[in-house]
Length: 152
Image (cartoon, rainbow, N blue to C red; front, top):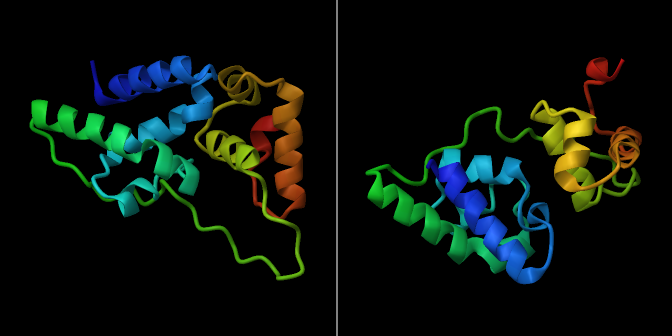
């Protein structure tokens, strides 16, 4: 079993304990980032897409402990640099511009930019496809650049 699957198992256990769907803990995109980058410090962990200050505080120790144990068992290095395309810098927004998108919309954006379809995102996040589509519309209205060719 690969590191990504180990992290999914940990996420599922935490979700079951908390009575929430697994994506509330972290979406798959975050787990993929953890498996690829294998963060070992808080600053590396918070660079993973989907990790904010709340999730950093709540899950840093558990997830980095799992990553560390897996890496030691499989003789893998930790703390790899993120791939250049992992995080995209958002263009600066005008001070009087729209309010920044919510976390849920940012998760939708990250999953969409990772190549997932609206239907796949909806299924994984346990939302309706119309909700995901409205997230994308709101992100565009807020100034995000989104490739909509796949929607046409």
